[in-house]
Amino acid sequence: MERNNRISAGKEAPMKIIKKRNIKIRRGFMRKTMTF
Image 1: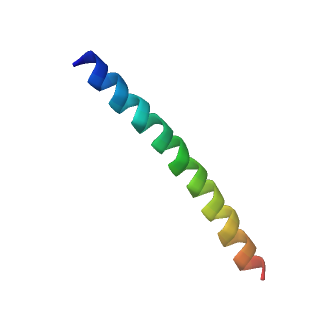
Image 2: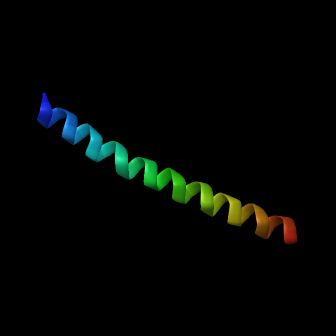
């Protein structure tokens, strides 16, 4: 059980980081489109 929990946590953590990066990229993209 502990091993499975560690694997799932390891997979979830990077996904959260990727989502945060995507949100920042989308905000920057929206700002660029608004300026044009």
